[in-house]
Image (cartoon, rainbow, N blue to C red; front, side):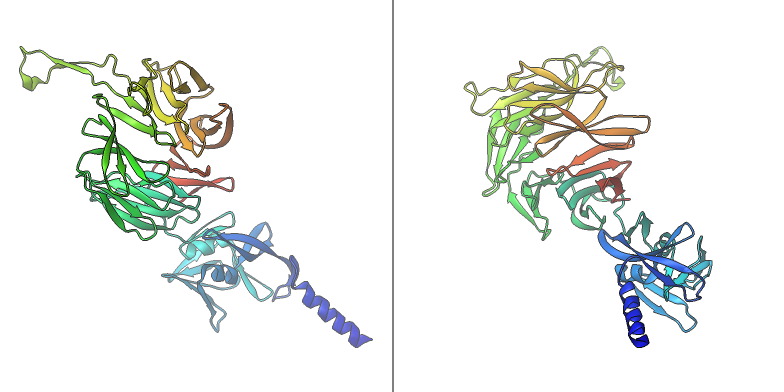
Length: 464
């Protein structure tokens, strides 16, 4: 009977070690400590790591963190634990108030502890010693890209981030979860990369007007047109077969480039200069754009030219919105607005039935408002005027606004394009200058030269 009981007790003990949490005796036999299995995100991948709570401090398993990072661990004869990761070597001992980081003694707030023959340590100090960062069970050892001037979502897991370089510009592919990056293109005197509808390539033009596409997987650029006309604001057709652009040094013509053969054809040539912010409907037959008039400049002919004494009259130079349907009988654009307010962030609906934009009056007391106008110019409706609107962004079939909020935050609103109904999505620091929204409604923001993404209810920087 005693033998059976002993066997039963051993089996129960073995079974207890396989469940979470467990109670394990310390090597010194001082007191029982509860070991739990906690989920950590290590470079965006989930890992189960053992943790204990000592007093009110959570400590994590040195071996589990080491394994998750792919680092190496060994124990010297004097019981020193040695962990090597990249160029960093960390040495630690049980109960010591310091750890050795590359030969330098570094103080610990809480000494390492041994429980059930495993070493536990404060994770933030340990990860920092290995060259990484730690916050709320999230560990990152990825070196982040310095800065972000422009960003665009490729898909829910990747963005193209662009920065000015010593010579020209550098474009990078950046992982949205980890911040890991790789160079996509280094170029001089080229336009911004314009992502294709399928997300597999991007288009750009050089200073001579030649147009290229770059494959995002192979990073190989291919010239698709030798046409040497000036091409501004390249935009893909929704089916990916063509590129539209504003042609000429005064952006006078709306033109189309066929990707398959590189041929360029004119869509609209109405002798009107200074078009901008070209928007295209899904079927590629309807267009919206601004027209800017140049100010009137007059000079006194009796004065020396070198005095640069001129008068500039900006009356009537406010941008106005025009709409053009290639099927229109008179083949002429329709002027949709005539007011004196500034107009920014023009967006054309997918079917070309209406345009939306932010209206900004010159009155200091006024606020930016979201306005929509139909493609005849007869029906203009304020959609959002509750808060000062800073930016309008398209994300799939929805519109998003960056607006004023509190003393230290801005707000992000989602606008239903069909009904105009608004919904608060998130808040962001008032230092955010630009939103980047994907077609799947993934959210990123440029904040003082850093790119942050919104994941799991928090903003996370993925560039420095």
